[in-house]
Image 1 (tube, rainbow, N blue to C red):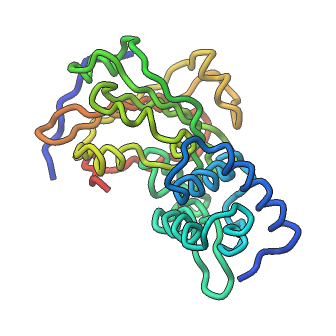
Image 2: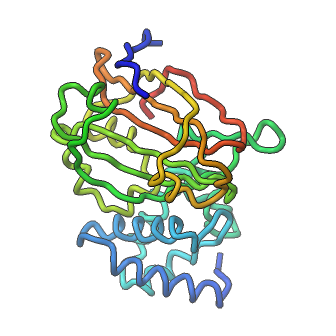
Length: 276
């Protein structure tokens, strides 16, 4: 249901011994399976994100002390400190003086601009967590190819968004495969948490400066329904298409979001988006 390409708008302490030991065992296994060899702090960061994406570490859970992590994984204390510091800087972890480091509650709700679902009090945002499903180069035609007219193939990143353990949404994110090919080499585990728009801004000088959003109600295709595990009560829902622009009003990304029916209110962000 594409209606042509839009124009850009005008710019404007110690862990519990039992839980800690189990967490360290799982972290050690995840660390071993992370692709790549260096830097070690990046591998450790990706391993922690993998445990969060799998649901083993949830919001509010305590992370083992840095020294215990370093000893269990055979890395330096500095490596463990750097990995946790990076996650804290991204608001994925929160440090509480005298208590330890914890998985932040709802940290991605503030970062994933199009998944800001309103809580029961009408003010707070429901916590959301992204799970990367796949990343691949595609040549299929669609609204993304009509929008990203200079691209001949596309990198598509699909992520399932868990909204407060109540329901799932699906995000399909498309960018020019030739221009942004390095994203195919990113550790896959990074895609569970990273803001792709932020990567485009910081590593490719392609910040999202404005967006056009189009929404419509429709019947979801069977493959989409199969992905939406939680809260699926009907075959219908809302599709939100997000057309993003960078410098000089050049198209930079296309995102299609599937939101099931009969769920919480969605807070729509301003059409003007800051780069980070």
